[in-house]
Amino acid sequence: MAKTKLTPVITAHWDDDKPWDIDSYRSHGGYSALDQVLKTDPDEVIETVKESGLRGRGGAGFPTGLKWSFVPQNDGKPHYLVINADESEPGACKDIPIMLANPHALIEGIIMTCHAIRANHAFIYIRGEVPHPIRHVRNAVEQARAAGFVGKKILGSDLDLDIVVHSGAGAYICGEETALLDSLEGRRGQPRLKPPFPAVAGLYASPTVVNNVETISSIPYILKNGVDWYRGFGTEKSPGFKVWAVSGHVNRPGIYEAPLGITMRELLDYAGGVRDGHSLKFWVPGGSSVPLLTEDQLDIPMTYEDMVEAGSMLGTGTPMVFDETTSVVKAITRWLEFYKHESCGKCTPCREGTYWITGTLKKFADGRGSEPEVKELVELCDQIMGRSFCALGDAAATPYPAALKFFRDEFTAATSQNPDEVFDPSATMVIPSLTGAKV
Image 1 (tube, helix red, strand yellow):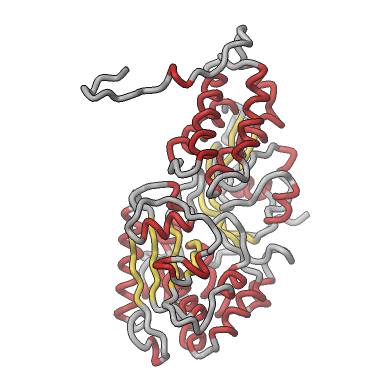
Image 2 (cartoon, rainbow, N blue to C red):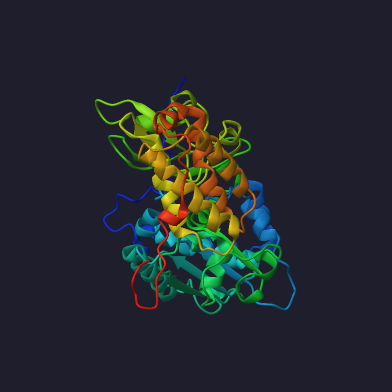
């Protein structure tokens, strides 16, 4: 079987001297299709994106054109586009490199999207801990403004557009679209109860589309080259190309742009294989919030539907690879500590569930677990899954069941000799007193 070839599109000119500069982007065809797109009826643009089959690259994989079509028209309200650039999923790192090396694809995609959904304001919400991408994107906005691509009557069209680059404060929960909107409005970042969905009542209670960086960066290439060209990549149900970020115990961790449907074995080969002298133990397809897989699943196509059938999810498409030196128990515990720390505390299942799961897992990591607690952890995960305000609770409830399925022996080996020993929250609780002493 022939090896799937890399298909550099978004990453095609990253080896230029200054790929983030507007001159570099335009020398590779950037902004060349913008004038024609702005002359096209917005509904036709939406229909083209629908036909392309582009799915959201932020993790959920929702059809992009369909999401755009949910925005009501002629409602008398302003419409907004919000770019979710708060990439903070453990193991996910593909939006930040895109903003560093090709910010103008994002800017051009924003202009085209705003034309389609009839929006005059766009916000790019970038994680505050990454100052270099923030600088590059702000510079790209100003370069586009100077070139006449941002502002009033863009290229003689009826589109007026202002783009605001907003720096977040480093809360993982603000990667959830409604928490991000609350943060943009100046409130504490906490998820909203849905419905209403952002397409109807989003930013400032107005119709809003929230899309991922990679999703919008794909738009200029689709609208320039056409639906047939885009569908020439990938599979029927998961068409197109994808920016894969392979990390972990590999010889060449990095960015590899390839069609959807490539296998992890092929991506692993591009990444130089598992680090020398070691063997693969497990891998995760798209960040820590998706169930782990083993070597037996290396040849499954990396598509949205195939990953679900395999018992995992494609997620952000940022595979992490772990070799035999990794303790599954400690890795899962570390991930749960992250979710516990980043829980906003708004809903009980997530706030209390992550606390109890982490406390119990810590016992296994220290070799003090008990056999009854192996089952108790499954029950705890079941109580969280599908019951929290947002996907953070589901993300926290995902790693353990998959780890138990493939590596139950590691959890049973981490049990203590006292099966009656259980997690006591009072033993770890710190209560501040009025004098400042801890009791």
